[in-house]
Image (cartoon, one colour):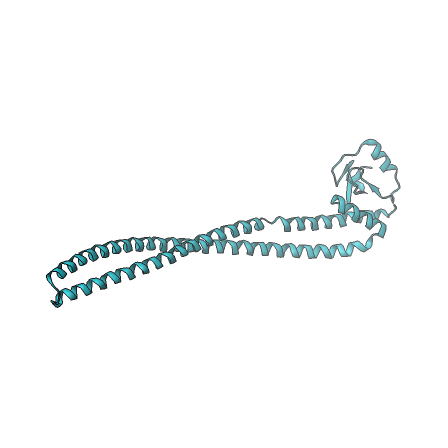
Length: 245
């Protein structure tokens, strides 16, 4: 394949642009903010699950406290009825004894229920504190996630700007090359990641392989417009004054 030396040298400009485009794409896939977002989302899910669990426990306790209060009210009402009955004077001595026994039983039952209720309310207070703490952790996790997403969006916006500029540069460079040379360049770039490289002091700028004396002699004797390629990486070898020929 033949191409004017000046055209071949411009391949280096194209390769430079493509290298930056590759770096942009690599950075887009490997932004540290992406890992931060993943971690932050995991933490937020855990915090939210913990909050839901605490809130569920609070709701369960509220129902238990309400049930306990209802039972206490029932015992208290029964005691009030018995006392009124005793005060009415309409009951016999035996009934008075039975009612008094029931009042004593009701008093013990009410005391036990109130003790249980107090314990439930203390647990409820502790869960309230847990819910407040977990809620604050949820808020902190949400803020951390929002911050990571903001920084990701800023980084992506910068990368989009860089890519747009390099795409524009590439659009200007591409028409300068013969179709056959461009197809070769694109094919090598697709397979090896770099389509053209500078030959500098016996070393390929693509794979950094140092060429032996026989290869250098062949390159030196090749016509200037001959399109040469690296035997190792396949990149188009561009000769300049830095090639040491």
